[in-house]
Image (cartoon, rainbow, N blue to C red; front, side, top):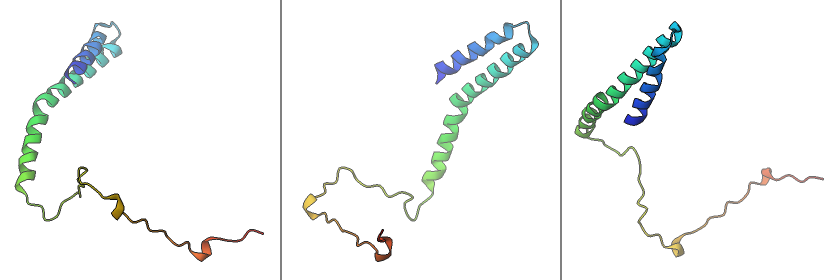
Length: 96
């Protein structure tokens, strides 16, 4: 993430060397935006995640949000039962 942001910043910063005003402005705007995004990801995001983690851990949940099944739990295949559904009488029509 850091390396890709630095490469993108450098690539768009090259546009600032252009003699055309639009391309130069694009280079300044995009490179500044990428630099701000990089520093936000490095400093603001971790502190925000830690703050939210502390708030979530202090709350008590009455019921779980997700039901998680244990994949390691053994299931005996002999105890599995396959139920066949009876088709409804109206669903099949004779074609003559």
